[in-house]
Length: 172
Image 1 (spheres, one colour):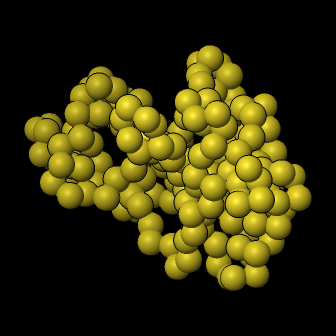
Image 2: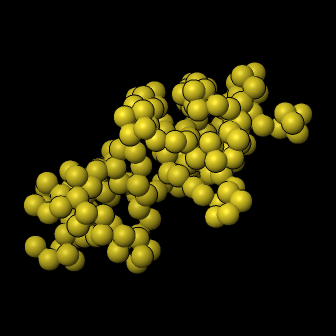
Image 3: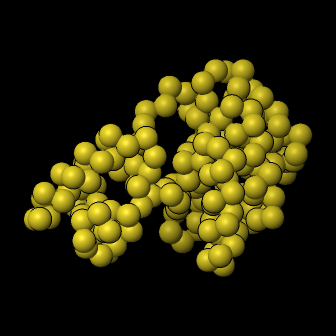
């Protein structure tokens, strides 16, 4: 199978699939290394394919009807609670961003839609002894939040405000 044929198969699998697919799973499917798949996806992205890497694997980006960027501040130990407050109020956490003094804006794709996604994210963080991007900025970070109705966004902000996680003018 050529690289172009493999990329066409990756494209079809991602378009047809409801769940993300990991580079390891693609590698096994096509009998190549994980790194070969990472390279294929990089080439596809360079050609404009809207593929994102999530903690669970690759997926095409979806255009959510409503998104908002919110600013939060908390400790790494409070991350699970912050994410749950968004999910429990009908939202999804699409990404995390920080404004780094040297590198500018750094962004990590999250695509957290369920409590299972939260558990997986936190488990991978712990297993890999990873650090949260927000640790680079004293806990301050931004999230792109997807929601269906304005009432959900209001509820999400209120839940984050009640916990002290929503970073607002009065938070300083």
